[in-house]
Image 1 (tube, helix red, strand yellow):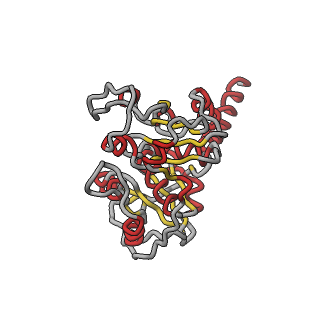
Image 2 (cartoon, rainbow, N blue to C red; image 1 turned 30 degrees about the vertical axis):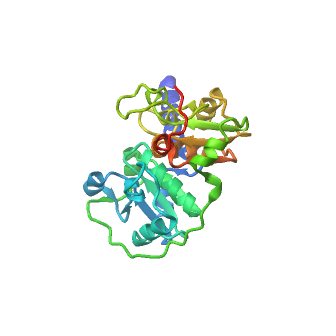
Image 3 (spheres, rainbow, N blue to C red; image 1 turned 90 degrees about the vertical axis):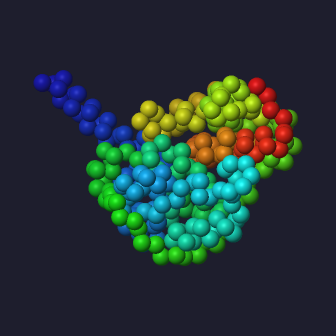
Length: 287
């Protein structure tokens, strides 16, 4: 009987503790979401694929898919102009002054990309919500199929240059001992053996830390201690300037959030043009 009580107490304590595992930096829990959503200044973005948004989404959320934010010509994944992006978010009813909460289909890949774009445009208060259906049910987060009615607003951009680098910057810092470049792609893309997508290798000197290492099998964020060990093992420390890229910078987004918001590394940037642009420019690659 005593053992049963001990086990029961442990289970209750564990269940109570689990939500705090993902309440790290700008990652919030369903319970925190339920509080924030009561504020009229809070806006919710669903970064799901459209078919999933049409099936079910958080009531009141607007749909923003990362591919809508890119230029239609040139290397895949390059962002629209600042004015075009500001216009896009304004038409979606999103202002730079809102508290913005983003979620996606479950692994924070798409939501982190939109998060970085909004941070780059100067939005100050942006959060990420894990898609954990057990937590969502517990917090009674309302879901619907109905498309949200949008009231357009004005998004006034204030570009945050400190979190962005271009190809020229990366090329000029390839031999800079104070810069660490992270390739967030799968190892086969990194070493140039991937057939789909085709990859010729990686930016010279880049270390490979795949984005999936940030999350558990269920898609939730790993603990701060686990994340710190992953980067430390690759020689990524807080005293360096860190640049993250992948093929289109979608996968780079979650590593940016982890490094900047969770681990509090002071100087983290995304090479937005990423591998696709780098390769199209004919810049050097290595395997």
